[in-house]
Image 1 (tube, rainbow, N blue to C red):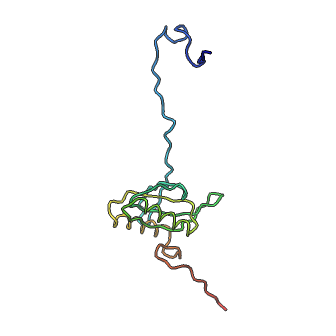
Image 2 (cartoon, rainbow, N blue to C red):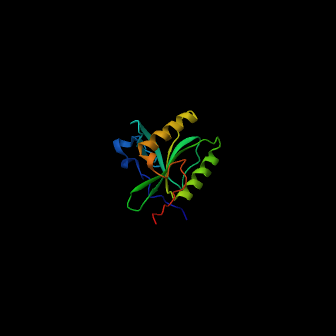
Image 3 (tube, rainbow, N blue to C red):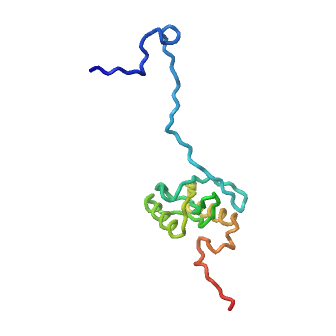
Length: 151
């Protein structure tokens, strides 16, 4: 039994302009925009970061990261600002996932635009202090929070 395709033009009379075929520019529907967030450092410098979830975080080279916990209502809390310095992208991913799971993060902001370790450390320091993190006990080098009793 022959199969007839209904999506084809049946004859020349159905074509526009007496049979002339017009070229249509097709746009790709597979292109998706990467979500980004701009962080302002203490110096006033703006830093663009790519945003991803902790679960779907890709492998990455040396970069600056910000780990956040975003609630259901959209409010976010910064948990950690730091740098990844491993040459192997899979090791950087392992560090991010372990640290994120330990802190309770569900979102990662990544900036892979530092040429040297000093550049990346400067950006992390600037963003951290731009958040007012100097007094925050969840700083990168800070020890776990101690509970003091007044009794």
